[in-house]
Length: 283
Image 1 (cartoon, rainbow, N blue to C red):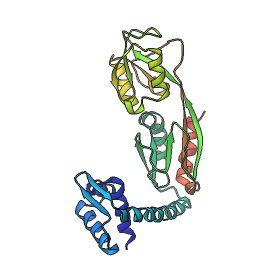
Image 2 (cartoon, rainbow, N blue to C red; image 1 turned 90 degrees about the horizontal axis):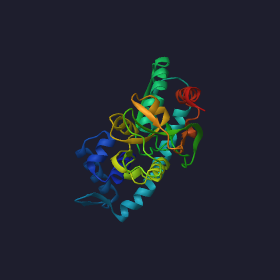
Image 3 (tube, one colour; image 1 turned 45 degrees about the vertical axis):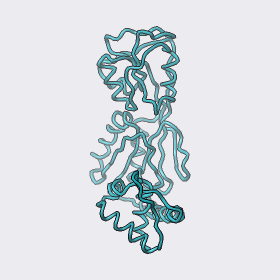
């Protein structure tokens, strides 16, 4: 049994298809399929049921999955331990954050950092998914809630205030009503966020005109006159054409947290960038 085959097994088990696993691993689909067949032959069991909707683990596959995940954890711990001991400012640094925070808050700091340290490549992933620090899907992550993963070192970076905004020509709504207003708000997957709940409470009779999990998209729709939106103030202040609307109460703000795996606490390039972010952005 080859560890490299188990890595492919894990990718197929998590993605459910050969194509998705191949893209994640940077291999071809036929290669992934061939390696899975070789692994099944080596253990003497079918590890997946091939269905029209994808690959589903068999009982034997589920047994191997548990052990393969433990092996992966140990392999990743080796990688993190070696990376954490690097002192030179070279190599790749992966950062995860929300869309607007990455674009408007982190990118200027990253640009300054890469100018000062040209041998470091910074990869910024703006995604609603919570990338795994343990699997090194990200080295440094910025989130709007505390980290609950084990072995993550974290700190509160800053408190972000939010405000209600419209375009320069948008008529301000009346608090407690909003019957003549159009709302630009979060999509259904994020409808329970505090600012989205606050907006519906303050303007219960307003119609929802536009939904998106992308704050920049909401801001641009707002500038275009499509309606009103609750936006992070740092984003709104960097978006020309928006006007702050006062309903007599402020929408709830959010804290931003930064975290990284404890095995990377000695990684020089991570420490240098984190120190710069804290210096530029922290409360």
